Structures are given as C-alpha cells and as structure tokens.
Length: 130
Image (cartoon, rainbow, N blue to C red; front, side):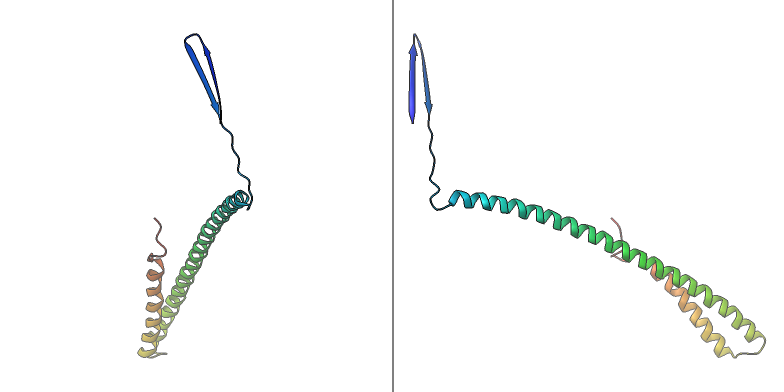
C-alpha cells in the first residue's frame, strides 16, 4: 500500500491506493470461473426444460380435448342412430313383427346411448380451466 500526502496551506490531501493479486497456483480462480459458466449454462438448460414441459403439457391438453370432442360427436351420432332404430322397432312391434322383449332390448340400447352424452359433456377435474 502506498500513501501520498500533500500539504498546501491549511488543506491536507491524502491519497492511498493498494493493489494486490493472487497467483492462481492451483487453478482456483479458473475453476470458479468455469463453475460460474457451468451454472449459467445449467440455468439456461433449466429454462428450456421448463418451456418444453409447458409446451408439451398444453399440446397434451389440446389433444385430450380434441379426443373428448370426437367421443362426444360419436356418442351423439350413436344416439341418433339408435333413436332411428328404436322408431323402426316400435313400428315393427305395432305391426306384430317383433316381440315386446325385442322392443325393450332396443329401447334399452337407445337409452344407454343417450346416457353417455351427459357423461362426456360433464367437465371432469382434469378438463376444468382456471
């Protein structure tokens, strides 16, 4: 440490400065620098991992929603088809071609098809949006 004192009149000015360095004999400073760089790279990789997880989660949710929409379309088409079939069976029963048992079985199939529609429309905990 070097000091310089300068006195002029009533004012005293003192300046002091120091300089030091450390010999990086065992590579400590270089290792710390490398560790800091590795930490930065790891942070960036972590950020990219979070983004990838988020994007895949959104994509998965979208695919699931599309699949549920398709299942609902199929359930509605099935119910329409079973309803048409039930009308035909009613006419056939009225004409004496089929028995009450066959009509009841067909009606049961129609009602079963109708019952699936509300289940597909009902939001499950995994389909709720916040």
